[in-house]
Length: 106
Image (tube, rainbow, N blue to C red; front, top):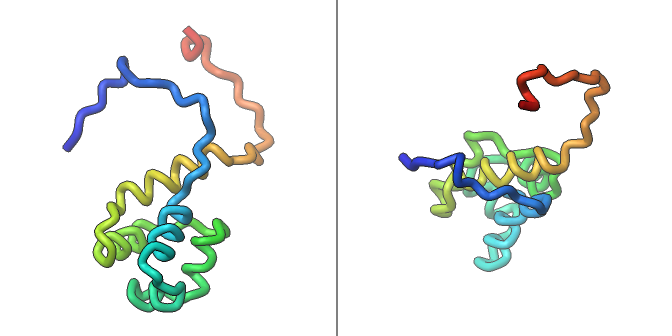
């Protein structure tokens, strides 16, 4: 396990632009693997893989683990890339205005 010292963390001032989709696309391109072959190898449909690669859907933990088994790319890394991308690109569609607690800004 790893330890993170949050008091020494560095604030990111850039919106993450890389998602797991980008990492997969690069990996597939580098190794000349088609979507059909990759999808078949990790036992998902080509349509599901296409949705992931085009950011119409995000991969499940199960799919991330299958990709790790097939490629050696960490499922944790893939999940973190997707999470960071989703969080940075969330449109804030929730219209409920939430007022912070007084202690939250202290």
